[in-house]
Length: 524
View 1 (spheres, helix red, strand yellow):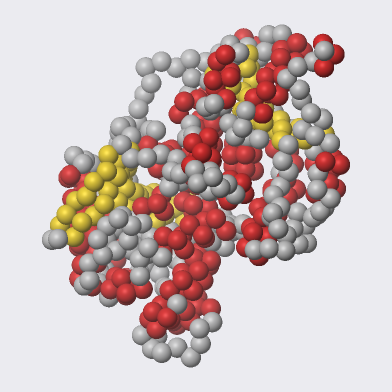
View 2: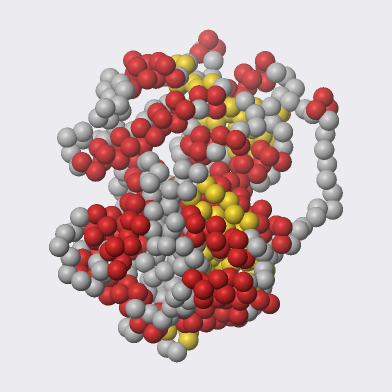
């Protein structure tokens, strides 16, 4: 399930080729998210669209050769001029006079566009730009030069070869994007990208490779960059194995742009570091058209009420019953405590009936319960994979939560299985601004059959390993971790091959509190 669906969608057609586009949001300026190449489609921006669309008008399109767009059968149809014309047609059809252009890797389309149509471009964000301003990455240089020759090996980067593409396209994209994601625990991002790559064909990618390209030399590339007059932001991971960071440095230098280097990051930062990328894009777009609020309100620290934000998972109604019980006890201990609830339907129905205060921005969340209903629509539900496929929703909801807690100085965050908050807080620890308590009755995932599908075993272990590593690196992020239950109720098993025993690890990292009942047993 997508975290946000388009407000408008359609096709533009040029010379018999249809290009699919989507439009989200109503704010200004407009942000045009440009696809990297026919190897992927507009879902590559799935972690950006929901957040950006709450602040700006956002356009995406599937480049010709993938997604819902046509697959023309000549190399000329994939040339730079054709893609630029498609971009212009999408803007014209949607009534977009100006836009901020954002691209990953294939920067030449947006640089050409900005140089040719300066009046249409407010700014340009180039992520890991591929530009012949520095040498080809040494890991690929040899094999790009011998691309058309019959290879004597299929190992490693030798897969960068016409004959191998035609023989084993899945094998190539699995290897290539595995290298594009050097960050540990990138299995979901890799799975997504491979799926998008399989929506095109090696034949289409060969046509794209043979398409007319400009510039071809460093001198021509420098000339194009110097023609760009709009503000430019360049973002580059220092572990990028596709485009050398020197290329990003050159684009920033020649366009007079700003360079942000992401240390420890690879090529696919919009998917692997979505929170940072989203915030950088928004900050850049805001700087182009500053929007001043008519009113700013600030409360002195000692005049602020005691406030808590309570995140209650919507996956099942068991959480809210115990959370309401916890809230009642908290109010006995701190009578003047104000609690803002952060929850979704059907939990909000229970909260309203109880007379609780729901945060006014709560309704902007992407619906987790709808996702689970969709996952179980065929009367089958694999909980781990359903959870795994919530990544897009988790990013969207964390971005919203982060805005809320930055706007309001809460004294404490309480999260009952607040998975998105917990995960992205560990990925972006600098965003913590209050004491944080995490509650759960689930610690890790185990495959239904440990001797069954090796993929299930590997993915569960990978998820658990990431959780264990996050906690070890940033123990300060949770001020209190509460396990709803007792240690001996946990499986007496390892999280996975080479990983700790679940009970032993829980004893080190959680405090057990037994079951939280929504009533006082002494009254019965």
